[in-house]
Image (cartoon, rainbow, N blue to C red; front, side):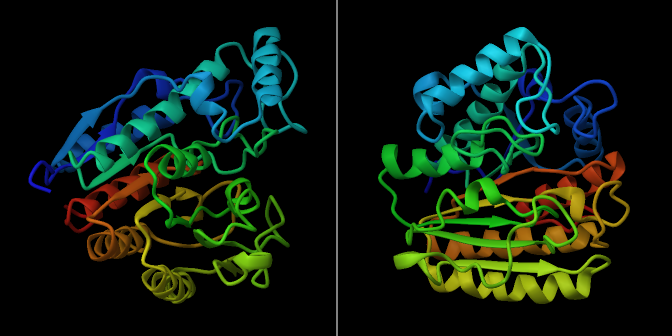
Length: 320
């Protein structure tokens, strides 16, 4: 523990900034730099870092080899989609997606090694990609690769994944729906009104994993009161699970004014979650917490929401 920096490790990397789609797509490649401009103005105690793109061996911790071949082939062709119409196939996007995974793994390693307690990956949190398919702007699921890395390479058993993106983290949830050692707490807009249409309250895990998953869908228009009530349940759930490592997907698309979602949450709610998880990380797992930016399609919201998360991880209020 003596090696740990009190600063938060934050990824700032042109390779991950390149993950985004052109032509006015909501997930544009401008998101990384807009966040970093806001973070610099906040003058928080952070250390910047970058990782190396994940190689095929690391990607296959979560994804199937056939899927990796499909992505490489389709991106080389540079036309059409990698899914039903949300995720375009563009030249170089497979490399950018691998860079996002590499950035998340860089943070995981830095936290495991004791160099930092907490870390943040702004373009990480690509939670819709499945083991063998793309979905919802997500090509490779860095969250899933991180979970597999923590278990297979680091030997950890009890991982907690918390997701507060407006969209249910289906790519992570269904990959581990039958796994009792992966705790999942997910607050999102009700799937009856928003993609991907999943994450109902009665989905608590299957078989031996029943009770190790907690979905808290919110109605359209829900704000901080409803969100924080759901968070209190998730916080208690994670606390009871005594995890060895914490992962947070903190999509800013749940903030009021996002163009493709309907929740009315404030950046303060995101800060409350980050601060609460940081405290749980100290209590249960030597402070080990990696947060990933996830969604967010109003650029001002994205900058404010993610900066509030980093501020909370630094032990500061959102205003600094």
